[in-house]
Every structure is written in structure tokens, then in C-alpha cells.
Amino acid sequence: MPTDLLEQLARLDVPPTPVAFDDDLHERLNRSLTAQHVVDLGLRALPVAAIEFVRAVCGLVSLTVAGKFPERKK
Amino acid sequence: MIADVRQRTDEELAADAAREGSDGPAFVALVERFRDRVWRICFRLLGNEQDANDAAQEVFLRLFLHRKSFEGRSRYATWVHGIAVRACLTMRRGRSRRQKRETLGPDDSWDQNQPGRAGAADGLKLDLMKMLDTLDEDDRAILILKYAEGHDYEELAEIFEMTPSALKMRVSRAREKLQQRFPNQI
Image (cartoon, rainbow over all chains, first blue to last red; front, side):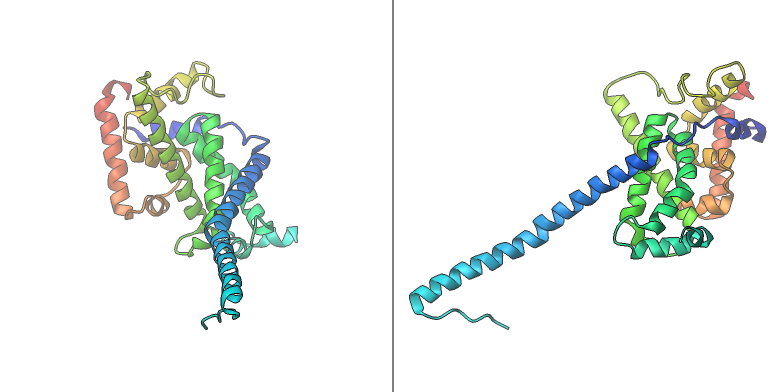
């Protein structure tokens, strides 16, 4: 395979980068970050919030029944 | 600030981008610096504007999401080009799987509607792309990056994660395959 035939590849025209490339990229980045934050919220923040809420409800029940709020383990 | 960003090396900007919480000035400067090169690689490997646009955006998205994982073992440019090549190869493999499923005709990339495709002088180039399409994806990408983008063996070896001597061998074998398959074209 003569090299010059393959070197014709370099002469193939490549169209310029689309004008809207940056805007589209920015939009795509924002979508991706939003999705990441939603996943973070679902996997990290919400379980912690739920656990704290259940703990508070249990504490309230305990306070009502036994008159004492359960102490947190340190 | 703009002048300051322009004077910084790719690697310095990458380190700054890794510290940024969002797409701050360092990442924006990197996008500006690599946009055209990444676009060109994607277009050459995928052969049409729509896929190239999609792949190039995917590359920068990956760069952003993995901006903390650049360890500086290679040049930043080489790392970016590696990500671009992998994104394009993944897209091409997905495309050919889809085409097989849908039992369409041969790969339609580098169609006649692309700029620079029409005209007598482009006949040979079209043939060349069709010839390259008969190679496996990695060989095709290696030849395109070497001959169209002018990467040297060392850079290509880093991008394709092999030794320079193995890469030279691969280039040589790919050229031999083309010679065997298209003896009359030469």
C-alpha cells in the first residue's frame, strides 16, 4: 500500500465545528449535572432524611409511652 | 483572567478544571482549545456531521465528569484524543450492530452529501474510505489518526494503549490487508 494513497486522507475536507456546539454542550452538561444531583439526592440525602424522620417519630412514641426520649448512641 | 488562561498549559488548565465545582473558566478554556481537534477526529472516524457532533459532545461530557481522573502520565492532549477515539469507536460499534439488526445495506458513512465528497477528485477519497471500512475498527482508526491527523507512533501507542513497536506492526499489517484486498486499486 503506497503511503501517498493513505496520505490523501489528510486532504479530505472536514466541515467546521457547528456554531451551536458550545450551547448544545452546555445544555448537555447541565442535563447531566441535574441527573447526577437527582441521583445523589435519591441515594444519599433522602435515605438520611428518612432515617432521621423515622427516628424522630420513634422518639416521640417513646416519649409518649415511657416519658423519656431515647438517647442517641455515640 | 482571559490572558492568564491562554498562557497556561493544557495540564495546568486540567488541574484547575479538576478543582472547579462546575464548568468554570479552566474547563471552558479547555473546551475552546480542544473543540476543533476533537470535532475533526470525530468527523473523520464517524464520517457524518450528526454523529460527529454527538460524539464530540459526549467526549467533552466525559472530560468534565472524569476531570479529576487525569493523572498526568501522558500529555493532556493525548488523553483527550484517547477519550475521543474510544467514544467514536463505541458509537461506530453500536451503529454497525444496529445496522446488522435492521439488515440495512452497507455502512453509509462518508455519504456523497458531505462537503468535499462530490466531484471527480473525491472519487478516489471515497474509495479510500470504503477500503478503510473493510478493516476492523481499531485498525481503521489507527490509520486515520496516523495519516489524516498526523499523529506519531508514540502518541498513537498511548492512545491505543500498546507499545510503539506493537503499533508499528499493527499499521504495517493493516496496510498489508488493504494491499491484499484491493490489489488493483494501487
